[in-house]
Image (cartoon, rainbow, N blue to C red; front, side):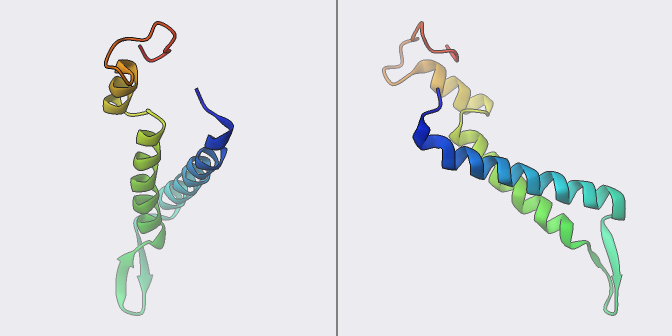
Length: 88
């Protein structure tokens, strides 16, 4: 169902997934907080993981990877099931 024009969007999804994974692995390894001169602060990777998670949800919806968008794709443009639609 992906067209050649979707390659850039798919690449962006993959890059975002890589950022999310790296950030969550960093938090798992180093913890949620860091000690700084100002005291205990949230680890910078926490914010990166949150931002990447929001972006991932947006890209997932774009590709029909959420339950609500999957249902919309199953209905099709005419709200009639398309026998050739793998989501139908």
